[in-house]
Image (cartoon, rainbow, N blue to C red):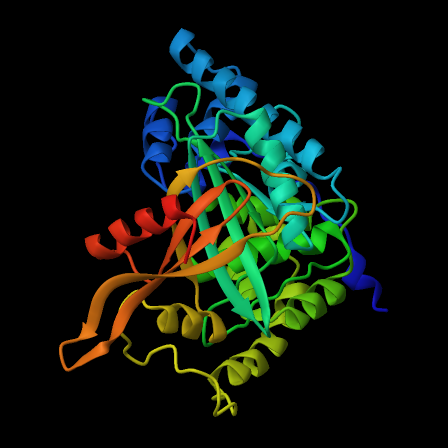
Length: 393
């Protein structure tokens, strides 16, 4: 192997000067301007700015110190949950605490939520039960998708922050897959690479399917690429290609190198390897599917019917759950069950023999109405509540 591919780089120094540069603020402005700008961009950057300011000896009053203390307690909550959940066999936490551990001592990496991957549905509910028992969960979101005949579930458990007027809520996202992909372009990938550093880098790249890259993403990349345990650049590029993420990781590398102070952290050997691999991945994405029996996810369908839900799942499209009743009864090995019900209303005035139907998802944490859109017919919701209390389809 080319020894250049394993050359280590100096660790990234996360300083106020670097943050001024990344946020595009002239250095003569006071740190309060830096903090105000950090609040206006994505990525939960204020805790990072405050911790770097404290580390740099900037004068801080009780308000800013209290905010930083809250954010450190928030990070500690996530770290404790990560330690607890990874006791469940096969469970892995992506990004979050493992990336935070790579930051310089005293610098607080912002943590919006905690991403947890489990190998199967039974362990998803086991993990969810542990979070529910440990935290004041007051909101649950669920998404169900189908992939190659297997049902996958993504679950988000939410609860208020220590100061809900100032800080975002806390959230743990648990799923039976690592990388959801992009419908019709990049398939869901359930597994993760063996090495945590690979898994974290791919999770960073995967974010591009949801939003543009942020300053925090670029900092995360830089601290990983300058870590002493970094695999070879060839291995990183090959893993990104195996997981269909070479173009996204390349874009993130190029975004980081667009900043003078971060550019030295990104090896040219890595970007060169990713540039060589990205065109083939773009070609794969532009090739239409040859499975003529697969449902067309773009085809119009009657809203909120069993057929629509089943078709979306068969096509790998997400179906969301509207919480009807929170009733935690989680136990090891428990799985969710689906239950169809009738609304009693006709699908069509010309076909009175067919009535609109819906689907309940009964889980160890509660019962959800499965829907395929943001707007739910009130009649469907009312029929779902009736079916819920009857306990019959």
